[in-house]
Length: 361
Image (tube, rainbow, N blue to C red; front, side):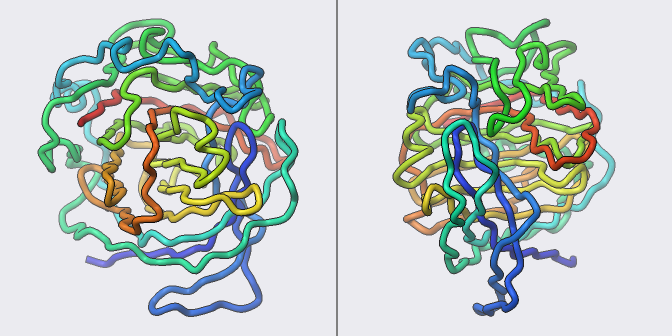
C-alpha cells in the first residue's frame, strides 16, 4: 500500500467569525527529520469559524451562544441505527483513504473582518509529525463508522434529521447574518431538512448557511458525522467544527478550535485542523490532508480525550496529535457550516449534505 504524505506550513489569522488560512513558500526549506518546513504565502487553507453575524459582537456570541442551550434541551436520540446510513445512502464508489502526518504550522492573516485584524503574520512554529494509522483495506465502499469499529457504545446525543423543513430548533441554532469574515451572507433559508438529510446551499453571490448544536456541550468525547459535498466550488468550504462553548476560548489564550473535516480545495481533498495557539491575532494549528472523493458519502469522526485528538474517515485513523500542550481542555460543541472564501473570481453554487450527527461519551 502506498501512503501519500503532505507536509505544509500554514498560517492562519484569527478574526471574528472564523479563521482564514494562507500558505506560502519561503525561498528556503528547513528539513526536520523526514519533514520539510516551509513558510507561508498566497493560497487559502482555512478553518472557518462560527457565525460572524450581528449577534457576534461580544465574546459570548458563538454560533450557538444562547443561554437556553444545554445537552438536556437537546433530548438526543438513543443509539442511532447504524443501518440508517447504509439503507438511506448507498455506499460510495471506492476511494482509497491516504492518511497524512499531522504537522504544526502557523496561519497567515486574511482580509479585515468585522473586528480589525493586524496584517502581521504569525510566527512560524516548527512542525511535529503525528503517528499515522495502518490504512490496509480502508476504502469509501466500506462505509464503516469509527463508532462501530472502535466500539464507542451508545450515542449520548445527536440528530438523524428525520424532521422536515428547518433544522430542529431544540437541537440547533441556525445562523442568520453576515457571512464568514464578513463576506457574503448566512441565511436561514440556505439550511433545510428533508428526506432524512440536512442540506446547506451556497449560491454564486455568497449567500450560504450554517448552524451550531445546542446538544452535547462537553469537554472530551467522540463525534461522528456522515457527510457528502455533491457540488463544491473551491471558494466554498464545507466544515465540521468543535467550537468552544465560551467564544473567548476561541479568540484568546490557546485559541482552541477543532475542525475535524474541512473541504478547502474543491471536491478532491479533505483536511483536519487542530488550532492550538494564538500568534499575534493569528492561529497556529497542526493539520493533515487526505485525498478523497468528497462527493461521495463518508463518515468523519473525531475522538478527543485529555491525552490526544484523533481523526477518522470511514473508521480509519488519518490524524492524531498527542502533544499535551495541543489538547484542548475547554467545553466544546458541534457546528456545521458551508463557508464562503471569495477569491475575486466567479463562484459556482455549492452544496453540502449531512445524513446524521452522533455524539458518544
